[in-house]
Image (cartoon, rainbow, N blue to C red):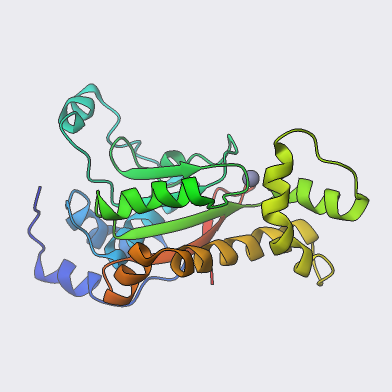
Length: 234
Ligand SMILES: [Zn+2]
């Protein structure tokens, strides 16, 4: 549904991307003006996500778009405004942490938020067929997949079953930052987010063409398990 923007909201949404951690009060009026827009810009989509996270992390989540009426409204088609590449972790549910609901996010989740060919195809589907203007790679604090990779590298112990495929995919990203200052798991989480952002653009002409045209933005982010806040990883 198209939603007319007031002059105030147009001015408010035409600026640069807001910094992570901006207050809900600062972005609230602009977000409200286009919250139901069917075709937000990448900047508007990112503002909407970060505003939703501010609500969630401050205990003021609205839990929107989760009624039976929303089920019926979306039955004929979907127009999610963001693609999320997230971890399978049960504590990092994109709809919850961004305060969104049915039809809002195109979730692609696997332990370690790694885009292999299947996940990349899924993300491209969201971009090409559904027109999402934003991709968020969402890593998180104390990620179990990153921790398992750090432990495997340090101990050399075999990794059981197909979990080895996850560790093997993360090993080239985690190994170079293992001995850098700071916590090795945290270093690995952030390095992996950056690597996945680069990889999506480098490996996909569908994504790269839209990024260069300005109709799609790919951003990295980190979810804090302790506070519930999402911050951008640059
Ligand atoms: Zn994880």
